[in-house]
Structures are given as C-alpha cells and as structure tokens.
Image 1 (cartoon, rainbow, N blue to C red):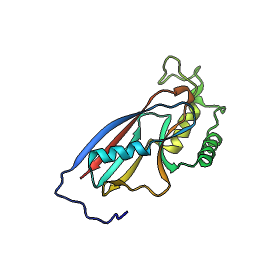
Image 2: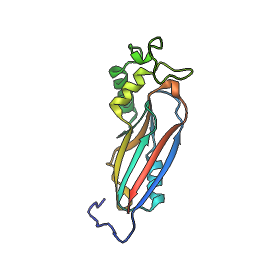
Image 3: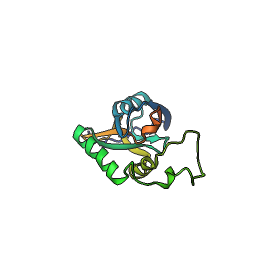
Image 4: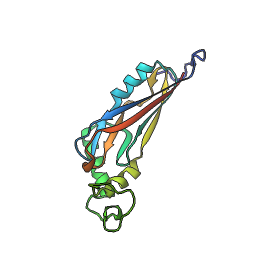
Length: 161
C-alpha cells in the first residue's frame, strides 16, 4: 500500500459516527470485527483520515491483535493470570461497596481489572480509502465479563477527507 499519495484537499472534511451492536456469548471472548470496520470505511468514501473504534463498556475492550486461535487462547490465559476471577476484589464485596450499585450486580472485579490492561479504544489511520492495518492485524471486541453476556455497543467514528 502506498501511504505517500497526496490527499485530494478539494474534498471537504467529513465526520461519520455509527454504532455496532456486538453480541457476545462467553468471557473472555475475542470477536473479530475487522470486516465490519472495513465496510464502514468503504461506505464513508473518506480517502484519508482516522477511524476510532470505542467500547461503551468498562468490561468490554477493543484491541488490535492477530487472529490466530492458539494465540487467542494464550491471551485469555494471560488475562486470567493477571486478574484471576477467583481473587479477592473490593468491588465484589457488596457488604461494603456503596457506589454504582445496580439490582443483580455481578461480582466482576476481575473483568474491570482486565479491561484496565486492554483499554477502551483503538485509532487507526485511513490512507487512500483503506485501513492501514499490518498483514496480521485484526480488530477485536474482547468480552471480559461472563455476567454481561448481552449486546455490546461499539462506537465507530471516522474523520477525514
């Protein structure tokens, strides 16, 4: 891909925002959304700019990684080692916790800690109408909370010319 082509500045600046609804079924779960993001880029007709993919949840992350099954298993194992589900988390102690409580609150401190490691968003350059992902790079929604197996809202915003 030739990334050095000069953009056509006669075009106007465009910003488009959309929301993807992603259904999850387990945790941790790595859901490849790359093709959906490519479709969004194609439909905007933006030739040069950036796209940001953002999870609206504190227990569902966005990452760029390789889609290789053994590696995905390795990453799930690493997340469990770093923030084991069965460790003690103050967030899970409902006898002392008083903030941000909901009916049926799940004990999910581990998934919040795993999210801290992974993060909420990725921003990718768009050049010549294409995502500039590397050969093996894919975009994933990572479900971290088995108690939140519900549709996840992923905001996608592309800006450019």
